[in-house]
Length: 531
Image 1 (cartoon, rainbow, N blue to C red):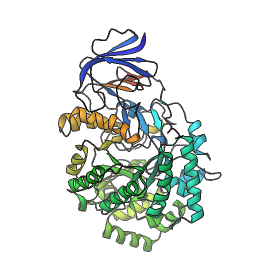
Image 2 (image 1 turned 90 degrees about the horizontal axis):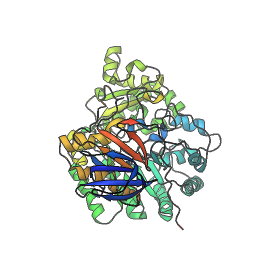
Image 3 (image 1 turned 60 degrees about the vertical axis):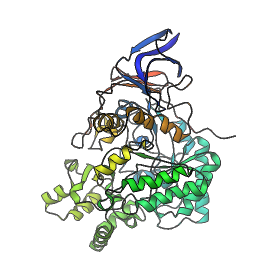
């Protein structure tokens, strides 16, 4: 007897093939059979008639390592059908924190993980003590974190000794089970690394069969050069490269999506191992301080705050932004395109634009930016509307572009319900299936499910997750294709998606009739060592 049978749904197996009506049988953590009109019996049956039965969605680019220890039920993600989250992205990871450095790491990550306690830890101990969660967790180690531990926030190349120390910390993380290395070359300290530093670390990844994901050096005016730099890592070292949240940011780039996609597609056609992910929104999010040129952050948050008090520094920053636009985001129409997500010291401005606040206070908008950073001690987080909808849709509608929310697992109650975060935290995957498939018809349903399941599994090098096949792990999502939708908005972001009725993780039901069961069956998925 099986433990569970999901009967009568339209099964999309994650390969992109057309769906078929079938029953999915599960015993323990594995799928035992997929067949129409199965005669197998089970302890429990779920009626999925009129619904789609798909592999659990893989959120291939997230920052839920900031929140899962505080919200292990992963409410905002599991209710979208997400069963697996890849964490440690954009060069930021919670480990390793060498002895005496956890306070420095916490200050560095303060705008992204304001409520998360941190401690000195090795990467192995970090994974070994990770709490039980509702979703599977795939860890990466961050290059920014490794550089912080070795070079600090100094604006220079690493010495040979420092690079060797980074390499040793990377080897330790890989031995502990990290999927690979992520980078965030758009901001300090990663921005201070030359391509040769990344190539050195990438060769270590290749040796271990590990992977490299990157928030490229510039998503604004230098996006084409930055994408070429990422592709060159794959070309020169042979390591698999995942380009994170592909976009064309800044008004000077609008309308160029096809050119960029064609260039990446040409590299893929040459056999260069590169994949990309994207979230289907025209707005990004970041710490406010990261919109400024990276030179202002040299030495860390404290020295940056002192610099921002000086009018000469503000004048230099204004000139830099007037010439090149915002760091990583390019030129925006005005400061009305920048909305405060979380201000710890001024919660009353959460959800309001910098331009609006500046006008109310009769301040120059850039002075308001600097004053926010000073008031929050660098912790302010913002949303930036910097992309053209035409480009976003072109990228979303490309079948080989994968789906990553670039967001945290949040909840509508408790500590993670604070502030006005990006609605993608609650809605990315359901937006793809609802607005992008059903309403805009950018993709077929089969293509969209493949992007979020089998396509992502292929990019991760997996064979036992991401598909509905006998023998695969029983990560399953059941949804109504007519009802599935993202509900979260910029004005009211803390709202769960609709249309997902059942989610199974490793054979255990976590979402049952649309409600969370409280189950925490997720696993820490470690990269196997190669022998």
